[in-house]
Image 1 (cartoon, helix red, strand yellow):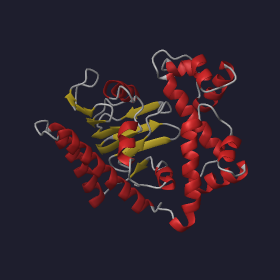
Image 2 (tube, one colour; image 1 turned 30 degrees about the vertical axis):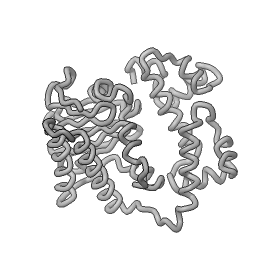
Image 3 (tube, helix red, strand yellow; image 1 turned 90 degrees about the horizontal axis):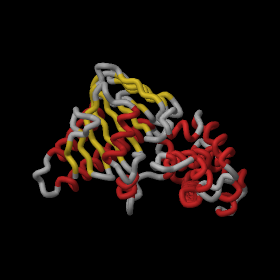
Image 4 (tube, helix red, strand yellow; image 1 turned 135 degrees about the horizontal axis):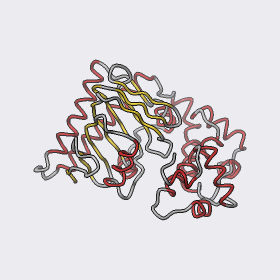
Length: 301
């Protein structure tokens, strides 16, 4: 486990378990470039953190992803955003302070291994809760969890420091999920969703495994033994998105991940993702992201 001061971000102190999580207090210097830099330094094998959690104790942050997320100490003081290329802009007030936790894919995978923490619909529903307001007992619980994470990270004399830190992070995630699900009332009725959940879960598994080869709704519908129309109907009812929207979203995320590889080119991404040519990939990417692949790679997003 690392406890060091980054040359990029000298204060507050940045703590990490390499390739798993990054924790720090935040102030007015946090921005998109810093987040990407912390990813590269502290999560070298998983440069796209799955999620970034921010709890503000003062100030305000605006993060422009596919939507505008506004987090402010006096309002929606908790922000949960995906670390993707669509995090294009970030503005921070000069009085900002709070906590930040970045979680990598490795940590998320290990967290859910062997556990049924959430159903697919619950996970997808939570993705719409970019900012929420924690107050009273809920705020106390979340702050206590974050303070415990910081305390565990700093207790490097304990032989089990890393494992105790992971447990503290798990506690934070469980408490966070509990608060949002309970107050957001987004726990689906199991009697209604069981059959649909199984189809959605299988669709997600196929999508993750086959997205680089297959982009058409018909392919996934055939694998699930349903019509494309019925698959989209189920996905729309459970995830509030059509099959086409979900496939395109995952395809863009995969393209962004490949583009972030140091020596990648637009042609290589087009070839790997089985587009007919670089031009068609470029048009697809620009339609969804707003800039060309190579302009995005150069940081022009």
